[in-house]
Image 1 (cartoon, rainbow, N blue to C red):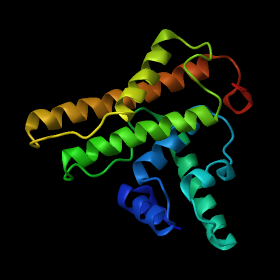
Image 2 (cartoon, rainbow, N blue to C red):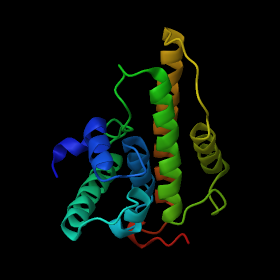
Image 3 (cartoon, helix red, strand yellow):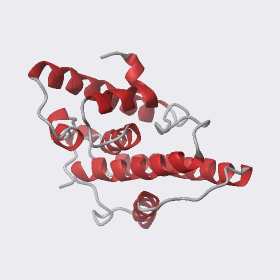
Length: 188
């Protein structure tokens, strides 16, 4: 596996080649949700969600290594600065409907990843924390979107992406304020 899988198309291609049930946006969202909790990452916890067919041991090992690499990269981006972390979504030249669908899938993946780590809106976090998770649920449940690809649609999409991105940082900040070092926190 190589660095190219960190972009949307590369990761999408890899997931399709493996027969994954997830697309690149949902996979990145899932890894991002887990990474923001600071919990140790075990790719074996996620492989069954990503690939429904049994992989050859060599391929499974390579794919697991790719997941670890991507998870570490996300965690580094979250640790470094707000500008480093970006949602992995289709390019801006793609149709807005496809990008909105991918954003919804990213949010679904994020919610799954954060839940696997034991975090939920009723885990004793703030009202803002619960509200952000509720926003992600709503975005993840959005249905088909009719668009004429207008500048207004584009601006609304960009605002929504930035809302999600900032929501991730608010969640990370609150998770880190809970006192225990991220690696030892048990939220189950």
